[in-house]
View (spheres, rainbow, N blue to C red):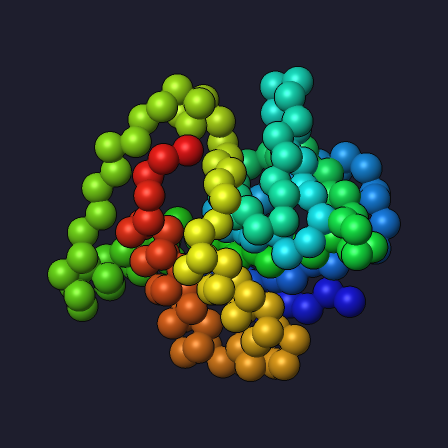
Length: 172
């Protein structure tokens, strides 16, 4: 069963989506209009890019830039593929970063510029304990309706995610 939190205006909001698949469906294309930040709960996702397949395994996060992507979801040993994805518009991301700066005096500067990251429209990384706990909490909230119709709760979780991503390690 898929659980989803959606808002009507994609340009000025964000969505939290939980995807569950019980069979391998092959490679499919997707065109996304917002930044996607996802976490694999079970199974493996492949991003196909320039004749290579990049695996994203259980416990890893991924960031997909807006645009066209080729993806493949493979069920895990539990018979399911599960992921949680937050779709964030650039405008909302800018508001969150600005809010973290104004409210908490935080500023973020990245000096990461490896050729691998610059040439792709996605990033894959193993989630640290804080990010794993964050996404497991989102999963629990989606299963218990804790975030549904709760704009304040959703906004708090988005701020938390952005803080965790920007304050973590810059490495690949």
